[in-house]
Image 1 (cartoon, rainbow, N blue to C red):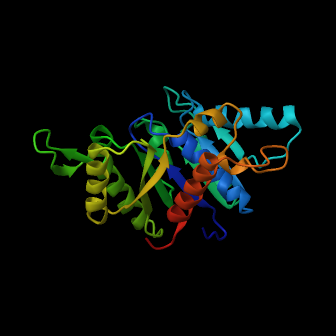
Image 2 (tube, rainbow, N blue to C red):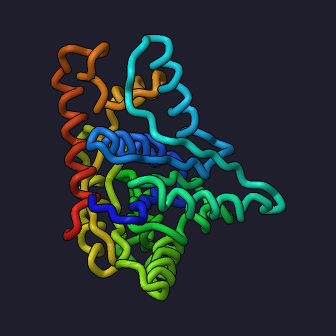
Length: 264
């Protein structure tokens, strides 16, 4: 990932809940911090607050165990009925853009004005998606009888408009990455079909597709203490990682490298 005077803004976005946006946001932020980038995170899904809980648990774990682990700057916003915090959210994003190397924004699992604000700024957009046809429908409308892709979904059309707005501002071409997330460890025809379709429409829809993180118990266990798989071999934690934990660390590193690659 390259940064200049302005921070690199990464928006993690999907209009469907339960795709693991917060886990992915946290791992991307910690990955960048271990590479010596100055990172902030913003939780715009304030009512759910999963990323904020992740950060709070990490602070508590470090304090309890007297361990120093990288913790990003953290900002949390909850949607208000009168949208009175919209100006503040924009102000914080714009202020951070000149203070940190990278800003990771975790968006709500549904479209609202905070969701819209986040999409005014991304250099990189990451859309985690599960391995079912229901998840695929976030990107494309599908014929229920034949399974054929009919057209871009409302979300994909929305991202197309985002791209046009960013281009109109003279900003670089949006790096949109759709990544498989919470992928079942079991081989299934359904999963193969979903990922094949995503690969086939990637260029047409303007994103890069990659298999991402598997549905591993370790991610759920680490969440309770605010940890990531990237932390496990740090002083004061595990001295030796299991094969499963090592595999999880490798897939996080591989995914991050793919996301931040300048050319897909």
